[in-house]
Image 1 (cartoon, rainbow, N blue to C red):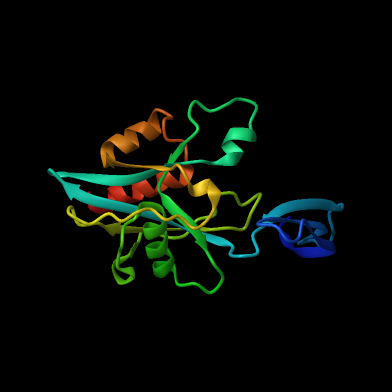
Image 2: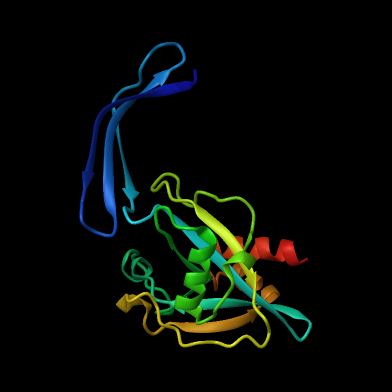
Amino acid sequence: MEVTGFEVLEDGRVGEGGHLRLRRMRMRLLLSDGSRTAEGTWDYVERPVGLDAVVVALFRRRSGRIEVLLRHGVRIPVQFGRPEKPESLLFPELVAGIVETGEDLSRRAAAEAMEEAGLRIEPSSVELLGPAVFPTPGMCAEVFHFVCYEVAPDAREHAVAGDGSPFEEGARLEWAALEDALARCGRGEIRDMKTEIGLRRLAEKVG
């Protein structure tokens, strides 16, 4: 038997007013033979300001190799959400940010490059890196949009202003060889899924 639809019995939100909220739905699945399953409850996370995110692979060509920009910043759930403590207070990943509702993807990518890396990039030159994907479909309907931008080797780097959040302070930027960054993913030194996917897609693009 296959699922043909849903019978929603209850649909509510918990935690209104914050950055995130919990949506709690009680329902039955409708099956192809006309029957219904038992009732079940599914909780998942919503983000009112904007559901999706853009992941920006900033790269440059220097000394015959491809270098990518990694941002080492604070991720509070990594520090407090697991029983074991991470080795470092800073978490390495690609530049990324929330795409607010109705916002242009390329312009958001350019804004994140300036806010998180101090690099002024041209939105019209931002390129897609494959299709958007769901990183955690059991917990959130968010999709990640992967993009890339080639930075000139002599591009001027501006002060990193951040977005006003205190959690953006104290971050560190690192230009790393693409092959080295991928090797660090394999060794578990870079443990961010979106970063590994973005690096692998970039490697496929640049050969």
